[in-house]
Image (cartoon, rainbow over all chains, first blue to last red):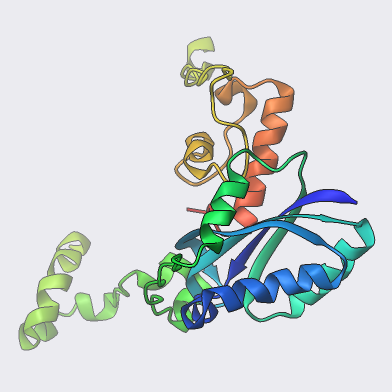
Length: 168
Length: 75
């Protein structure tokens, strides 16, 4: 039995429905393969550095548990299959950090309520593929060089006028 | 000719690690972010001033943070 640290990125949709159920979903998978869960707590809810499975925000669950090495390999498979778990990270730990047990117990108290995650930002299909490049305005050079069109469309001419100026 | 080939002096090293610095761990995002270029590349050992072991731990921690979506691969 070794001590492991597990960080799980949970889908905010599941967290919004019920945090304790979302947490139990993960701890049940751990317990299923003989892990002894020492602590499990809400670590953070934050914006992701890049979209994962179409989500731009997620909630992190931090666990410390003891498990045999066979169990870890088997639970990895279950975690991959579970749709509520977007990402997970299992690493060896030397000891449960100081203060971790207290934070976990504070969460177990009756008056604890996990903060409701804010709404996810919408991610267009273009943005998923191209990232920030998708936000760049598309400059139509053929139209910018034709001055006749600029006067006809008031709002667009303001944007395109400097481009035409640079070209000349 | 030698002057043309001479590179501008490299940026100074950030300094070695002190005992009271935060632990190099994937959860210490604010600390790890100091060791990234604006494009989110990891600084070299020359730039961080870390010893071999610390630099290896830094690399591992940043890569773990990237996997979890805590830090960007490319910014």
